[in-house]
Image 1 (tube, helix red, strand yellow):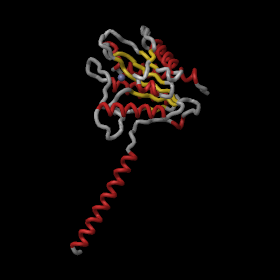
Image 2 (cartoon, protein in one colour):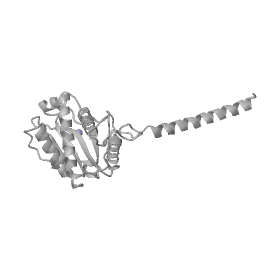
Image 3 (tube, helix red, strand yellow):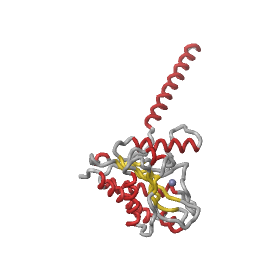
Image 4 (cartoon, helix red, strand yellow):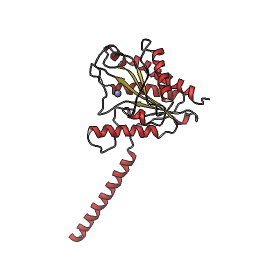
Length: 247
Ligand SMILES: [Zn+2]
């Protein structure tokens, strides 16, 4: 092979390599969809709403932190995963905004502030992609004064049923695990982005205070997390049975 031919062949090879690389890159981007959506669609009864569980925070965003340094993100996920398992077993189609310790911001978004915004946008887009849904965002609370404890439900009146969901859930917490809890459900505005902009009945369940030593310890235990999960699941079921055609 003379030099000219050799270089032509080399150029051709380089071009083909570049083309293949681009194809591989595009394909991997397309197929690398975040593995955050789980469902048991096959067993879903048509008239039941899809249940969307949103374990608050994740990845770069730990949320509030217990006295012993444990962030709420893991507690939220542990509880939400158990709620998913309970409701899935009952035949509900359950969707989670995340199923592991990740923030679900778009690839390539730089800076923590932008990443958090992108993460929230993606959670909202997922929630609003289901025309018939009920959503519960799961969080833990924190306050400067360690004496405060107890779950509290937040809702926005942008969907008329959200208040009822909040009240049903608040009562379940009192009946099941927090008999001394006399907190009231609380209406919020657009400061709680997901609640305000979601198009389905939705609440934020603050399950307890990580700033309260006793409650913080309980919230970090498997047994209490199970109880909280059961409470949330039964609150959702009661709300659905009261408001939807359940066969
Ligand atoms: Zn939180």
